[in-house]
Length: 410
Image (cartoon, rainbow, N blue to C red; front, side, top):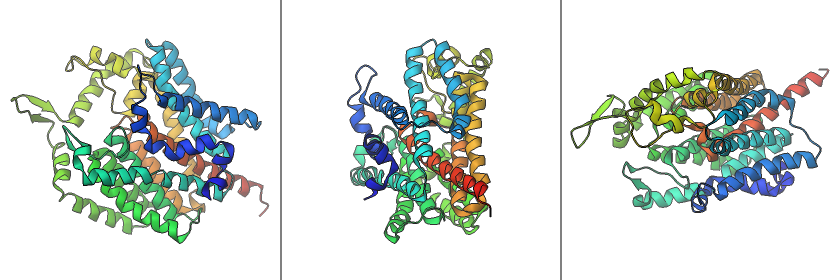
């Protein structure tokens, strides 16, 4: 069985089962929220405690390669908590980032062979079974996923946007499983992955999340540019066909003009135009504390102070780069880019060993960096867990290959 072969299960059955089911837990965790403290917060702490406790028990240590990537960002994050006007809120929010680090480190530390990487991939793929089952129900009964914005598929996730990026990841992992020469799966599993790509695409369109559409397109387009040119043509053709869908046309047309006329005769900015105004409005505040920012996750706290168009409710930046620059300053933003670019460079260095597989991963990382421009990616916890799990595992394999190449006399 896959469970018995997984290094994650051997290390901690609790962490393994938590990762396997996390994509399906949002509805349950939402019911446990009391006064801002939920069972989800306890799960976050559990991941951190189990990871570091496991390292101590096994006399292990966090690899130097991981610390080089993460240390700067984590240190600045801790500083931003200390200077925050709401340190408790900032700490609770930053715990999510600590779980990303723990999950990345866990995969990096315990993935030591091709079989280990395969078990990680299977875990991610199998985690989608319940979300897809719920999605089928939501397609059959649209009222279960209809809001004031119309039908937007959300599966088992708390928001359609989070589900959308999770679907992009499932499609990318499925595509990697099919194309990579690093992993070898049974024909049955490859057939499953082949089926999951169009299924993910169908559900993705129904989420109506435009930035995730861009991410999905970018993955296959970049892969085509890097390795198989036919995918450039294929994804462009699919994109053109998608434009014939009425709600796709509506979502794209919404971006064509900066404003819309409301039913009451007023003028309303579309979501992208609104975001650009928010980003520009926050610039003066960013300049005021340009090095270490105002405190982690304080953008919404200060929102009404710098954005006069809104009178009663604070919002996040909907841009990871702006959010980090505001919360952690340009020092924090620099180290966030060090983390992302460092992972990108690792896959570029190992490109020749598995050009097809690394093309997919490079496309995935690049698409993530692109959509950081328009979404609160760092706050999409479920999606980020699986993304950092995959990246930690792939970096571990690349490190293993490099070491093997250095130590071999031939």
